[in-house]
Length: 295
Image (cartoon, rainbow, N blue to C red; front, side, top):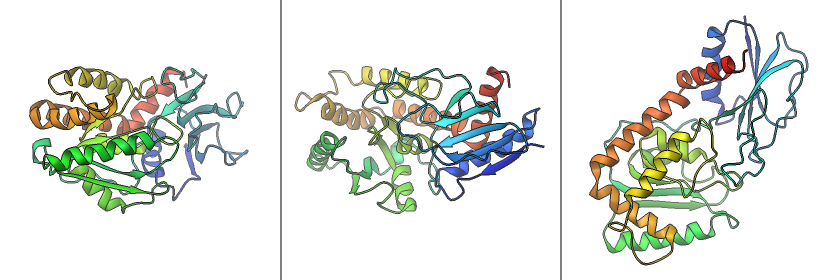
């Protein structure tokens, strides 16, 4: 029977992968050694069966060094290999390597679901300030705060220093579940962020400022983003400020003026998350990837 070697126990992103692998090992016909490990940490040389690796944390989107190893059958990897990690079209097709969704950090939950029109916060933000990637975004958040204050638009905003170093996960989760709009700017290195997945899980209207890496994981969002930008036409776009802040203001207004369409997006976001990122959904995605690779 397949074995699971979990070397990332205690990591806040381990729980969904471990749940998915425990489901997958009961379904897969052959026996494998599923190894969960941080991408640059040591992989056991000797295992009971041929290995299927689940690698985390490589925000540089490198190609795993285990590619081509005879004792490795397949690799699932957070942050898919890319030739340019800031170009969403630069995802590499590497033999026997599949992208792994980030999913949500442990402790974030989908609390008692509130329809969009019943959520108290029109928008929210909680995240670290990155002096390299988020200077413009922080300036735009300050403009959005001013815009919201002038119109009595309810919001919550928390900046902090360092990754996962702000409000408690329970406070963060409560905020996300009570927000209509969540902004998901790129991470410090990668285009990908846990915030995106957590907001989708909670049924927010999620806005990224550009496409996310092309491929199965983000195709749904990239198409949704195109449609949303078309919705934010001249009726909602504000004529002042740059394009990014104009889109942020327009989205906050659009959601309030179009609660039914926003509600559809909320339901679709949660369905997408459950289909791909719940332990059951992720196990089915992994099974499909293995079947496509003829495992």
